[in-house]
Length: 206
Image (cartoon, one colour):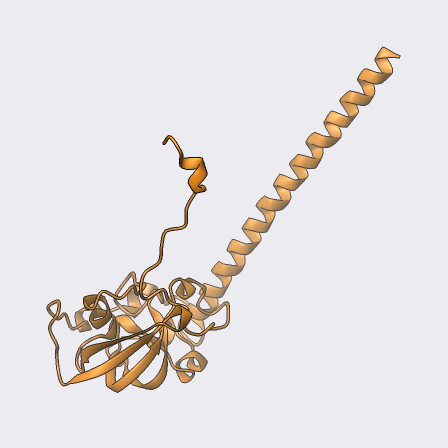
């Protein structure tokens, strides 16, 4: 009858509502868990083998960063080859006393960076050939582990080339430093087209 139908409809609505609520709680819980894991990873990397009160501000010393004028070559000129996505290669001239990041940016190459003080890890890359000097970084192991350093990982913002070098770049892997494996040369060093938010047909008339 009508009352039975209404009761069934109400029960179905309540069940659907509970289902959506459970899904929302699950997604929220998953997000919290993911954030907690990322924070725990950062804490472990930051505190491993160091005093528990070690802070990022204690590991960075911008006074050691040698600032050079844009476009200037400091020290003996060497060749730095940036390797990127789709087998892209860009060779630039870099001074032996110049930071690789600065030389790349001066040449118009797309390289990620944030702090420029050897601490955030955004500019991390891998030295495929040759060697670099990262001695200007106050506490390199605050950001990179011994294994990562041994594998050739380098923070380009305060790394100087020791002779000719080849550098595997990345565009956003630095934010996953310590949580995912290095994927090789994936940097969009030549730039990339922005990801469209809608198809061309959807923009007709806008």
